[in-house]
Length: 183
Length: 183
DNA sequence: CTAAAGTTTCAATAATTACTGAAACTTTAG
DNA sequence: CTAAAGTTTCAGTAATTATTGAAACTTTAG
Image 1 (cartoon, chains in turn yellow, blue, cyan, brown):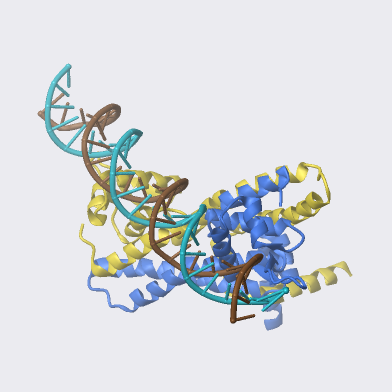
Image 2 (tube, chains in turn yellow, brown, purple, blue; image 1 turned 180 degrees about the vertical axis):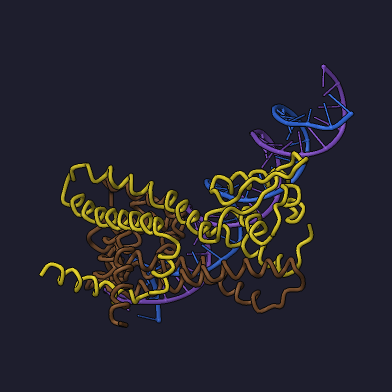
């Protein structure tokens, strides 16, 4: 498995970005390679293409599977495991969002809920709690909203995204409509 | 500056989460402390409260300023710099989103644009480019959409979030309205 | 059942990133 | 202008995170 310069550029870049997207360099490279490779490939091919250790590949694959970003694939008369990306690019984005929400929001949300149950001991804590409530409400709002958006069909999501800030106008229309139906 | 247990719990947790949100532990702690403290505080007070070195505080404050998350504040007849958080919680979220977009999407988007200008050398690269285009379009869509959402007023954003997956219904309404006006 | 091929795990080590604290620099009261 | 107080920088070190590779385990052909 030799990568062409174009493919190598992308794979290496994706590796560097990986750490910012929540996985480490080699996991990012592995995923990039799987995205742009048409046929399923084996762990050994990945290790060879990226010049990384077999052990590291194995761990990376496990992580990608836990993110549900890749899928196992078997070839007839071959007991080796082959891998390929799972679902569309949209699915990928959804998975990454969800996984990150779990890591980045849920623990904080849960801690904030606990703290907000306590009774503030003094004025200082009173003010602190008020701020924490704001943070809590914001995080909860984002969490709920994003999980509801994920339930929307890809087509509707697409419409919504294409609409952009035009959403504002649609929201106005909604108000008018509701008013009319109440009259 | 002694922190009450409740405040300490929150500050320490925010520190741990900090690395997941794009800044390091101490920067996270510092920001948390500034969020829950009512009055502006000095760099020394921060260092003392968190038991971290003065140098580290100075670097962290610089980072928070570059994120536009905190503001300088001066007290009369005191040449020391005091700091306080900047804007509402919504503003904070916007800044964090924007900063992360810059770090996490823009570089990849720019690389993808470049690669897509190249002519594929063979069938393998042809397939690769097609995949890269999908990734590119997705990232571009998200980038544009999120920056347009940020231009929406906080009230509209709030309405939109409260609407949740109900957006779907509003989109349907939009279609009906357009149809009617075309007839 | 045996052994060869394939796979996984994990302790040791490398690479990266964060933090300290002392030194250099800046500001201002007197 | 001087010196004391305040602030910033950055080289060295600590802490964390990622990677290797050898050993243990698993599978299956013969």
